[in-house]
Length: 335
Image (tube, rainbow, N blue to C red; front, side, top):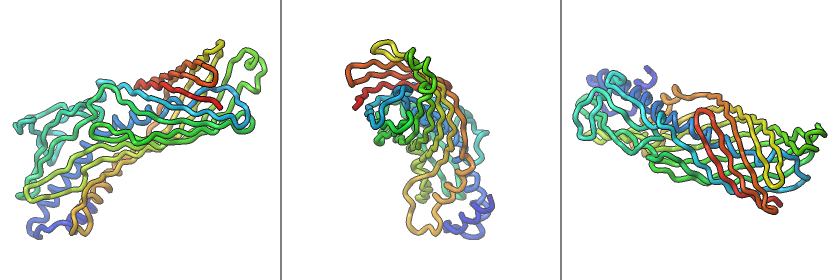
């Protein structure tokens, strides 16, 4: 904390006689903002991992060298009620106190996560004679989150396929979402003649994806125009995934099940307008402090899928389940 207080001295215009009290107040504001950020953004970063995890494998079967598959995917993520809000109390904060929507003091409240509603309350604190007040950030205000992405694969040697996934930036209420990645799938049943004869297909997959989420956060404004540059919170998630799939073909249908394990490194940073004249912006201080809530998470998921063939066109629905439920519907074309 001493590091942050020293930096605050460099960017502040306060007098030395005021510095100790104001430095302590700023330190409390910093801690409260990071505490709130963790509670607010964590459900969304967990959801981003699930959204990126399913739909990688169209079929575990072996394909001919240089065969290409292109797919258009519509993903639906179901937001559980337990992850739409969290409770805060005045005792959770050392700088802020809670006000309701009409600015009346309250001791506790339920506020939305990034996956929650658009309800807003107010938080108030003071740095010396300067009041800092803000409205709590809003959520996506939806029970389902939709995004589209494109997949492509090309068959390589020895039953291996290169797979890529890409989504354009998806606009959400109060935020954005994007994912892209690549992986290698290897066919396993080619080593077992009995499985091939019974049209039972098996494969293993290793892939990497990057999930990028951002949400409007809290731009505090004091009565002297204090700007902290934390208008937006950005979550950057790097995920390594391992997956095993098995399928059985029934004429035009292919039924598939899978087991998924992934490990994600989650980092955050604040984005916002940085006023001129600050030798070291407040935003820099906040981005140093937010490193305290960087995380590494491991998830295990199940996946079921059904694929239907119409000549060279395939229709496929996929469900992944674990902590969350994620669905994906795809239209694919095999060249």
